[in-house]
Each structure stands twice: as C-alpha cells, then as structure tokens.
Image 1 (tube, rainbow, N blue to C red):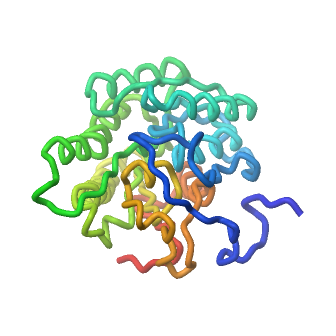
Image 2 (image 1 turned 60 degrees about the horizontal axis):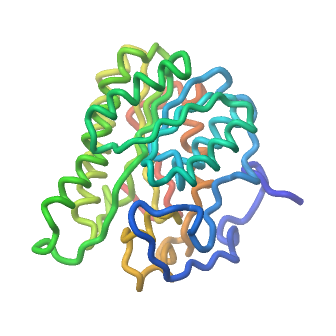
Length: 298
C-alpha cells in the first residue's frame, strides 16, 4: 500500500531505513546533494483543498522544511511565492516544478534575507505576482555550530540574528498592510528555544526570540483577525545539518536522542504548517506547535 500523510503507521518504525551519513556541504547546502535524500513529501503528500485560493509567501522555500511546506500548500490549492538564496537555484527550480505540476501559480524571488531592501521588495513582488497575500511563513534560517563563545565571530553572530530575526521583522512589517482578516503568519522557531545546545548559542538565542516575537505579535494582531503562530521543529534532516549546522561526528547519530529514536523528515513538518495556515485553526493564536519526536517542552 502506498503511504501518504493519512496512512495509519507506527511512527517509531517510519523511515526505518534512514541512515544519515557523515558529509559536508558549504553553506547554504543543497537538497540535490544531500545523502540520503530528505523526504519533502514529493511522493506522499495528498492535498484536500484546505488552502484553495490562498496566496502564500515562504522563505527558505527551496529545501528542507520550507520546500516541504511549499509542496503541501500547493497541493492544498494555494499559490506560492518562494524566497531562497541565489546559490540554491537548483533546489528551488525542482521545487517550483513540483508546485507547478500541482496547479499552483509560482513566483520565484531569489535574494539574501540579510538584505533589508530585498526583504521589503520580496513582499512587494510576492503580492504583485500572486495578486495578494494571506499566508506568510518566515522559515529561512542560518545555523552554524560553534564550540566556544570566545571563538564565535562577531560576523557569524550578526549574520545569524539578521537572517533569523531581523528578516522576520522586516518581512512581517512589510506584509502587514496586505494581510486581510483570516490571514495567517507562521514562524519557524525550534526546540533549541527551550532546550538549547551548548554549540548553538547564537542560533538557539534567535529561536527563543522568534518564539517570543510570535506570542507578542499574536496578541497585537488577534483583534484584527490575523493569526500568528509558530512551529518548533526538533532534529529534522535538511541541508542545514551538513553545512556546519552540526559537527561531522554527530551526523550519524542525528536525532537518535528523541523518544522516537530517529530524526524527523521535512514531510512530517508540512502538515503542521498547513493546519496553522488553514481555517481549521481559527481559534489557535500565539501557539508554538512542537514537532520534535516526543521531546518534552514547556
């Protein structure tokens, strides 16, 4: 029997043949050269028109969680604007083809989230290309491990905060005038916001900031009928992990510390974003939805 997101299955045995391998890619990393391949839901995600007619902007949409979310949104009936780095064009083109095959209008907008002007223009181009905007997914991020705060370079610290936090602020601020009641903003935080690793001080700090930003903005926008929520992934297999997101010696055991005993796949995140974007979550505001294989959170 073929599997989709509705198939009854034992989650502890899902992806039983998945064995991550030591490997290194330069930043930002590509799904095209990741071994083994991440599951983006290309062959499994089945839509049911839950986002029919919606218009979404997704950052980091070329690979990993962003790509899986884009595929799910398109198969649920949404049109999608994709933000990604120019160096990720190979991955982005593949994902765009999958979205187009699903019947979605696709707007590809490459650029660097560290660039304030790009972030603001990104929203303008998404609105023009899609004919509006009612879903914003702030997902693009930077993660580079560092063992010792004394060797954490100022530039890396600044780049991590600019990519993960400042870009979210710039994009969200630019998007707000276009969002109508019923719109949804979804930010990607992390289990690192609650259970930070000693080698990810800068990254974990940004994820805690994203979590708090989400909950504060949710209170501000709820009276306007705009819902703001977040998804907090645990260890998910993406190019981020092999482009210095984790030390090489940790790759082979990546995700085994979770109660499920394995890493998650991007395809397992996408339904959380679909839920938070859809009208099914109309009474869900300021929530952080943890998708982490069972690790306890506050």
